[in-house]
Length: 111
Length: 113
Image (cartoon, rainbow over all chains, first blue to last red; front, side, top):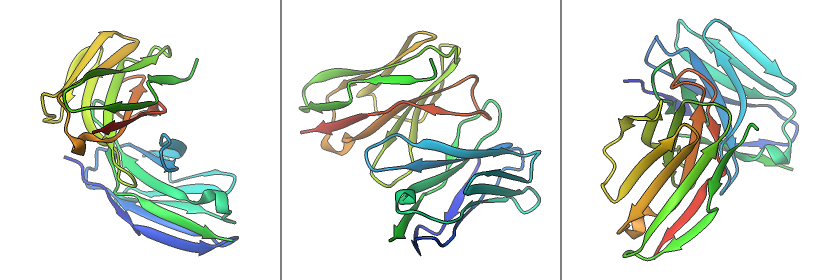
């Protein structure tokens, strides 16, 4: 089955700096890679996703890059704000299969 | 309607109680999921229904019993739970199983006393 690894497990940045979270996956057939943001006690919220036929996707301060050859994808948050503080999960999936989640990154943005 | 609705939002139950969690979506999605989640950990898959048939059962104890009465509804029946079952229980749905956006409900925060 698929194995998704996520690093780092915790990340602290100063407000205004950039944050980068990285994930690797093992199944070359995985073709859908979402990123979720979750605040304590709330539902995971999809913030950006990418499909395997695309190398990069951007939405305002958030971007995701995918390297299919190396089987890794990364979340980039620029100009971080205190409200970006949360736990972030990556995931990998393919048709007919479940989502495989990374172990999560607890991001703290220091004002 | 682009929501997955879960009830109740909070539930406290004793170890001898029987209760049910409910999930509803009206987006025409044919894959529905139950996840269990502890704080700051990733969601753990419990069950997947695809076209109202149980597709995946991740070796969940029999004190958890899923039911999919129709394509819009998903229930999780709880009986004789243990304190370690206390967690956030999330329902989710997808147009079809795998490879597409997963829509999460707001969850049920369960405490077992």
